[in-house]
View 1 (cartoon, one colour):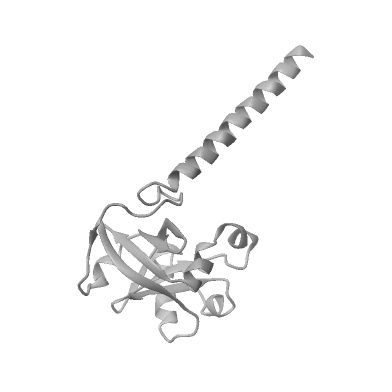
View 2: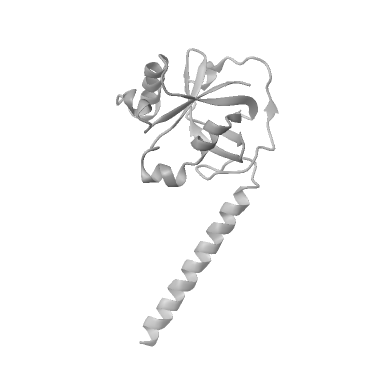
Length: 172
């Protein structure tokens, strides 16, 4: 019985240490210069601001980029699609419990779309504008499919019913 009790106490202490370390790590990331992989980060503190018009073709084959919302201030890593000189970022699972619990940034972006995009150490001030009904959606979704879904078709209905949100990053 002593071994079982000791083992139980050890497991509880280990779980508590892991929980405290996780909370401290996530809190500390609020002050980090951007995200770390999939972990949300703080405001960008490095990067060169680019103010001139940009040819977004260089993003076509980039897997991910970072962006920071200005309200509330937070940054994350995301997928990105480019089509005919316009750039877009998606947010999937918006109707699932996962999306409702973890994905707050799209709701914040819809209220206040001011953002900073960081690509290869360059900063671009942009505004995120949700696209729901636009002729550009089929080719943008085809690009999303090409880059991230192995070519599986993504129907426009995913956007119109609200499961997939797509934001265009437009000049401020």
